[in-house]
Image (tube, rainbow, N blue to C red; front, side):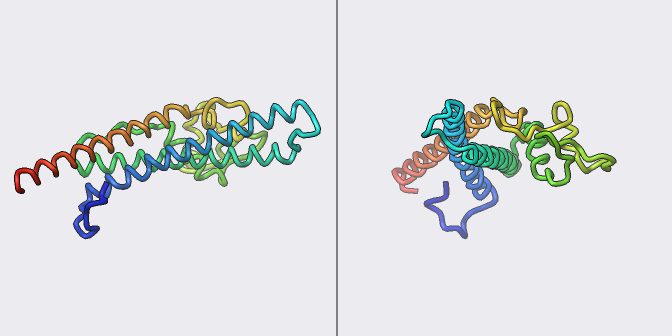
Amino acid sequence: MTWDMDPEDLDAEQTAAEFVQRWAEAVLRQAARTRAVRKKTAADDRAYDRNEEWSPSFWQIEANYRELWTEEHMLVWSAHQLERWQARLAKERNQPVPPENKDLRNVRNALEHLDEAALGGYTATPPEGAGWGQGRSLRNLPDKMMSLDVAGSGTLFEVLDRGMIETAALAVVKSIEDELDQRAMDHYADLMRGK
């Protein structure tokens, strides 16, 4: 977004717009990586179930699920960063801040503090006797718990719609491209008028 500007000339709005673009593109890259790992995991699962000589090992299947879980975690984190930077850009432009996706915030926060949760049976729940702040995001999730199993889930951590996250990021990238096109046309018009 700022390719034609000296970094010293950037203001807070332009910097925030740059970060919106960075995180929107990061979400799209991360969504593609997550899709690829999910596809490989599903294919390997089918092959493992056939139990042929060429089928992946149990250890490969386990490695696939570990990779998928962390890729989905990074997708949530990237989407959360995009949302935060969109809010900052709106503030810089004196525009209404888009409504926060509370599920995204709660999943992201629960993942961030997962080491404090009570763990068991592929689930995370608020710790026993936890104070008000500890485990708060887990308490805000459906069923007051987070699934730690990615097998067969059509959503991220059984809360977030993967497709909606990617669609929202695509819309942001499109709006940035439209804004850049408009700036280029305005700049060209200024040049033609001798400004």
